[in-house]
Structures are given as C-alpha cells and as structure tokens.
Image (tube, rainbow, N blue to C red; front, side, top):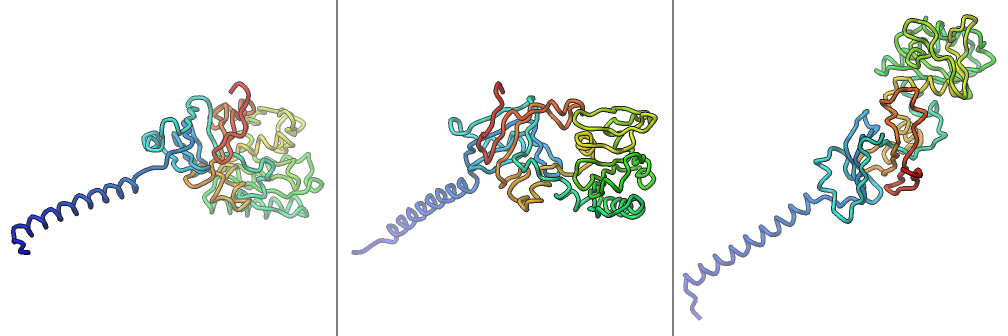
Length: 308
C-alpha cells in the first residue's frame, strides 16, 4: 500500500494537534489541582488574636480539626463552599482567641521563668534577694529584650509582711515591671511601676485601688500599698506584666506541644474560644465580666453558653 507524503503530513499534523490538546488539558488539570483549596468544615470571622507575635487576623478556616487558613477575608473565600462550610461570624461581639489549655498550669513553671525571670531558693533571705537575685533577673530580662521581670520561690517566713517591698524593688529597678511570687504562688511582691499599671498606686503617687475581691493589697500605716499582695490581688497585679506571649503559648511550651497547640496557626489543632468581651482592650475593671460564649476543641463545638 502506497502512502503519499501529503497523507503522512496531514496525519502528523492531526497527531500533533491531538498531543497539544491533551497536554493543555493535563496541564490545566495539574494547575487546578495545585491551586485548589480544601473546602473548610468551619470558617470563623471576627477580631481574632492568634497568639503568634501578638498578631490579629480577620478570619480562619478549619478542616479536619486543624487550621488550614489564617489571614484576611479575601484569602478565605477559596475555602468556603456553600452547604458544606459552617460559617461563624463573631465580628463585633467580642474576641476570638486560642484556648483549651490546662487551666491549672502554673505560669511560673512554664516559659515565662525561662525567658524573663528566675526561680530562687526558698532559703534565700531578703538581703540576698535584693542584692543578687533581683539584679540578675533584671539583667536577664533586659539582655533578652523583654520588658518585665517575673520570678518565684521566696519563702513567706523569711520575707516579713511589713516591709515596703515596692520601694526596695524600686531601688534595684524602677523602669520595668517586676513581680516575684512566693514558693506557693499565693502571694507576691511588686515594684511601683507595676502597681501603677494596676492602678493600685496613682500616677501622682497617691494610693489608688486598695481592694481586690478574693485577695488582699497590703497597706502601710499611712494607707499606702507596700507592694505585698495576696491571692487574687496577686493574680490581678501579675496580669499587668508586659509579657510578650499569651498564656496559651506558654502552657503549650511547658507541655512541649507548641508545634501542635497554643496559637491560631496553620497546621495546628483548632482549639479556640469565643469570648463575649474584648479582654485586650476593655477597661481592666471590666475583665472579670468576660465569659466564654463558646469553646471549640479540634474544630468541634464542645461548649456553648446559654443564650449566646
């Protein structure tokens, strides 16, 4: 059978056209698969504190219990599929923040001590504390670029209650907040700048807030705070430290789970809270009013406050 050159040319041309079409189709399929986004099970909008570098975002997406997107609204659209993605819009209702940590984990045993403070021996007397421990802790904090000193370990019987600890601490360092908890964590001593942040001492040096429910602010004979605080008064004062990281991250690091939990980040488990008040911007006196409206564990709602 004799095949002309013209027939071969036409056949080759058709073959090349076919190969081109198939290549384009395969290429488009690969491109689409490379650029497709997983359909999210859950999408949450609002004021979202990620606990990563003190960052806020507008929205995050959750798939199979983990965050698959954290960022702005424009980038989130590709993860939403009507009828398959549950959407929670918490905009203007409060704060969305990491959660589901160990509620009784002791901050002093976590990352804070390692990064900005120190643990002292219960045998340490006041004199050694002021001359050696505090100066070393201040140097450690400033060298690491942090803006607060947090420590623990002093023994109640060796630290008389009637000393004016804020002035003693001020003599060592008065330009960054200092807080040292006792060995049990039920009492603490603070310098003046921290007491001013807590409004226990006013900016003009006069006495400010002198009572905290569930705690005690120790006062001298003139009614001035000494810097010695107990129970919830200590918790309140400590909360005003200029910590660089949120408690949830510190707890995760304490449990060696910081790559899995503790912040709102892509790849981590979606454990978070919807809080009915923006505790990061509301007046300090209103923080106690904040309540969880809902709690999510690995992307699933495990608690919801009635009427929320």
